[in-house]
Length: 219
Image (cartoon, helix red, strand yellow):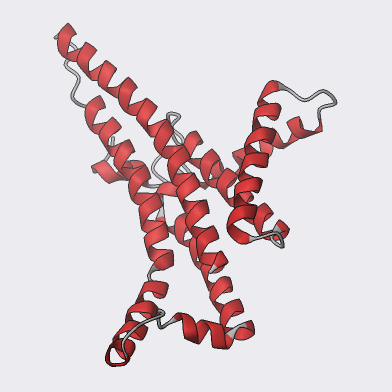
């Protein structure tokens, strides 16, 4: 029995709802060694090629290593978003401990690299072109705050979107009246529509996280 509505997001609340769900992608790695690729592999390869092409446009030609990192980040978030839609499996990306662990190290590495190797450009980036001299101190403060909150906004956006959909599914599931066929049918149809929307949100949030992190790196 749940002690509260948010206990569904506790990784220790049940047997399968734990951090081990993040290791499930390892079970699918063996399919990459098949002699004849399957249709899902063809689809995955096409998606990866399209993402690589888009990342190259955003980051330039000398971005092979960064492309691999960003695409791996996208696939990791996407798989955890999808696997969390199955019953009794914990959605790791709905926990700030996971989203912050993904956003903060990457953001911090970008900041450190910029300030160490491109110090003058980093200082110039704090003052937008054409800013009046009296407003320059305020613009520097605003740019610093904007840079500092980037990993927080990335993490909270991903976690909040995953939590919101799961909470709606949980609330709808508790509203069914088994004695009324019309109410039960309406609840089931609403859950099916919301589940389809959650699949879309899983893809969109993975893509948004990857794209924003790529834009931060390209700056």
